[in-house]
Amino acid sequence: MIQRAAPAYIRKLFGSSSPHLQVECRYYTAQVATSLRPGVYSDDEECPVVDWDKLGFGFMPTDYMYITKSCDVAGNFEQGQLNRYVNIQLSPSAGVLNYGQGLFEGTKAYRQDNGGLSLFRPRENAIRMQIGAERMCMPYPSTDQFVDAVKQTALANKRWIPPSGKGSLYIRPLLFGSGSILGLAPAPEYTFLVYACPVGNYFKEGTAPLNLYVDEDFHRASRGGAGGVKSITNYAPVLRAIRNARERGFSDVLYLDSVNKRYIEEVSSCNIFLVKGRVISTPIACGTILEGVTRKSIMDIAIDLGYQVEERLIEADELISADEVFCTGTAVGVAPVGSITYKGQRIDYKIKSELVCKKLYSTLVGIQKGHIEDKRDWIVDIK
Image 1: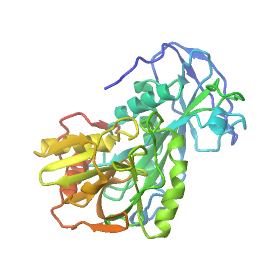
Image 2: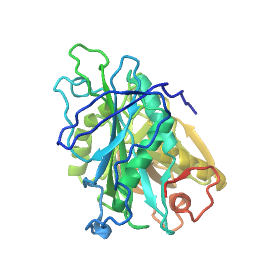
Image 3: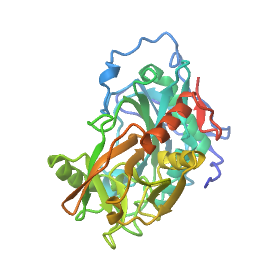
C-alpha cells in the first residue's frame, strides 16, 4: 500500500456568496482542521423531497461541496472549506480544459440500520488519487486531508443520504489543473473539490443481470498509458463504444487488451470477475486496468469465504466455459452478468439464487451496514 507524507503547509480558502468562487491565499502550519460554517451540520434540517424507491444513478444537486486550492510553487494545499454547491469559475486556458489534467474518485456514504452514518474505505481512494496525481504531474492532498474532506462533505449533505436499503450518497472527489497554461506543461494551480449526490442502481436494468458486448474495435487503454489511474481522459473515449452497444440492446462494453486483442480487461466503468468451480479469476492489473476499491474488497471477502482467487491474464475464450461472470465497482456494486456477446456468439449464464457474486455482495453489504463484523477496519463511522 502506497502512502506519501502530507505537505508541511496548509492554506485556507475563503468562499463568497456569489455563484463564482473567489480565492484568497493564507498560510497555516497547523494540521488539517475542519472548516465548518455555522449551521451546516444542524440536526433539524428537513428531509429532501425524493422518491427513494425510484432513485437511479442520475445527477441531483445537494447542499454543500468542499473546495481547496494549491496556488504556490511547492504544491501545498490550503485548508479546505465547505461552500454551498454552486458553479465554479474556471479560466478558458485552465490545464484541465486544454490538456485534460484531472482525476476523479468515487466513494459512498451509507446510512446504517441503527441510524449511524459511515464511509467505506475512503483511505484507499485517497491513496489511489495520490498514485494518479504522480502519473499526471499534479500535487495532491494528504490522505488525512482527503478523508477529512469526504467526511465533511458527507456530513454537510447528510439529509441526502437515502434510508438504509434505498441507496447511498455517492461522493465524487475531483483534482484538476485549474490554473491557466498555454504550452503543454503542468498547470500552475490545482483545485481539489468534493461534491455528493444520492444514488441508487447504476445500470438502468437495476438489479437485473447485465448484457455485455465484447468490442474488438475500440480499446479503453493501452500499455504505457493512463488506464491504471482514474484520469478523466479515460472515460470520454469509450462513450462511442457504449453508445453503439446500447443502441444494440447491450448494457455495456467489455474491452480487450489493445496489443493482442485476446485478453479481457474491464468494462467501461467497472472490473470483471469469472467464476469456475471454487476459483474466482479477475484480469491482472498491469497498467491498463483500474484497481477498484470494490474489486480489492471482493477479492479479500472471497478468500475469507474459502475461494481461490487469481489475478491473471484471462483469454476472452474463457468466457465460454465460465460458470458465472460478475462486475464490481463503487457505482455498480456487485452486478451479475446474464450474457456476453463475443464474435457474434451470445454466451448465456444461468442466474440462480446461490450465485457466488450474491454471496460475496451480501457479505460486503453486511459489513457496510454493520451486520457483519468489520475485521479489517474498512468502515469509517462519521456519526
